[in-house]
Image 1: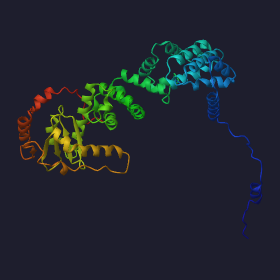
Image 2 (image 1 turned 180 degrees about the vertical axis):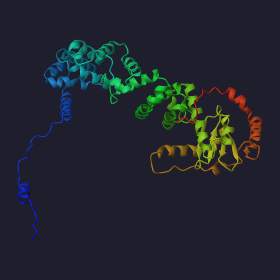
Image 3 (image 1 turned 90 degrees about the vertical axis):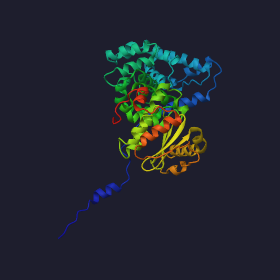
Image 4 (image 1 turned 30 degrees about the horizontal axis):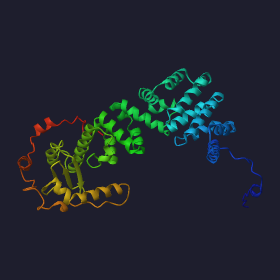
Amino acid sequence: MRYEYKPALLQGWLREKRQPLLEKKIENSNEKYRGLLEQLKEKFQSASFQSEVEFIGWANKLTRRERLLLPNLYNEKLPEIIKKSMIQVFLQTAKSEHRLFRVMVDVVYQTCNLDELWKVLKYSYAYHKEKLEKRMEEKQSKKWRQFLLSKDPILYLATEAYGSEKGILEELETFYLKKNFPLFKLVLMEIFHLADENFFIREQALYQEIFISATSEEQQKMAHQLINKCKLNHVKPLGKLIFEKLKTYRRKPMLWRYVGEEEKRRFAQWILKLEMRDFFGNVNRNHERFRYWEKFISKLEDVVVTDERSTMIMYFPDVVIVEVLGTGAVYIYDAAVFQKHFQSKIDQMLMEREKYSNSWMKPREVKRTQFMDINLILPEGRLVHHKGWQYKFDAWLRRELGWEVRRDVLLQKETERDEGDFDTD
């Protein structure tokens, strides 16, 4: 006989309707905090204050928790009378609430207000110094005292973080400063002023993260410090990031307003040399054409590669030279002639490259054939790569343009600082 087990009693118990064992939901303290803050914000916005007395009277009716939350509503755009009144209330609250110190730390870091709110923070710490320092190690409390007494709080934090064996993030967290606060970025910008090349190599991930989220002005200042402090081939990924966002000063002059002239020049020469090396490197890292044009890098202003990476357009102050990868002649145009007849096509292509950089759509490439107009080139400005072509090119450039073409002389004139080995990643 065959038997089959069925848990009839268990199935029946599961079908019964019963009251839940846990009737109350677990309270989320963060949601509760945000809820109270939103309620306080609504109260604040709906009230109408005509004087300091009215505001202080309103603030005195707030609950203890609401008074602790009130500093979060401080805003530089508020009327002066309200800001002044809020400061008075904060100072009054600081006397009875040691917890206000921690609130003020976050508010100062969020607003970057190192004037009135900074004074409240210092007052709160001084008033409850003994109680606050009981929760700190002696070394940490000493740093806090020095921090609050410093004439330049941002420089103090930058100096402490840069010189710390813990690392920047961990050191700044001892001051409760994390990456999500706007003041963190100000401190990091100050660290960049103090830093050497080793710092930028070590903190490439942090630099990249901050650079991507920075404003245009901040990106330019970050670029200036990196170019000034580093051999660019030692921080090649960061250099390429700068080029991706800012291009070169010739192509995007408004994005280089906060970068020094020497730094602009050095970066342009480095990235253009890199572009040339990548272009010819598709065939041979020591390609003879790269070796030839490399000697003119100090005169080069911009490079654009097009036509499926088979054509390179080199911009010099007086001429534009269209070089080809593989078989084909070089076309040399007066700079003004090229600007008038061809530059609009290049500009359109570059604009589409930026527009579709994160898209599946491909920009339309300008073909080499569109630059092959023998009627517009300079006299005898079509040069071919026959045997001994370098000597013929030198002779034409010297005769027609007055260029210095001797490699040793050009390298002596080259003032570019050594950027390190190109093979360094």
